[in-house]
Image (cartoon, rainbow, N blue to C red; front, side, top):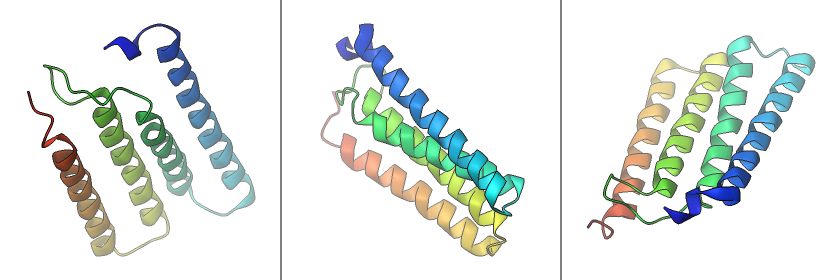
Length: 125
């Protein structure tokens, strides 16, 4: 892919790094000023980092290649799953019912799978 080379690729990496730094800063502030446990702090960090991965995915190429889905689709799915893992950690931290937490996880996985299937239904080669 042409857009995954050179300075444009490094710029996207720098933007993603900025998201991770912001996620770390928010998690540290939350650890200092709230009584959220360690699982909640880690979950918050993972959630914000996942949102960053998802947000930056739209800057990548949406064209699939012969090896599978496009770079954009891959990063969108990965970022959403990372954010979902962070959400589940936060839910567990706040002692949400295990059934509700499992339902949120399953609905999230199904939503990502369905979205990727619809996005790629007309793009196959």
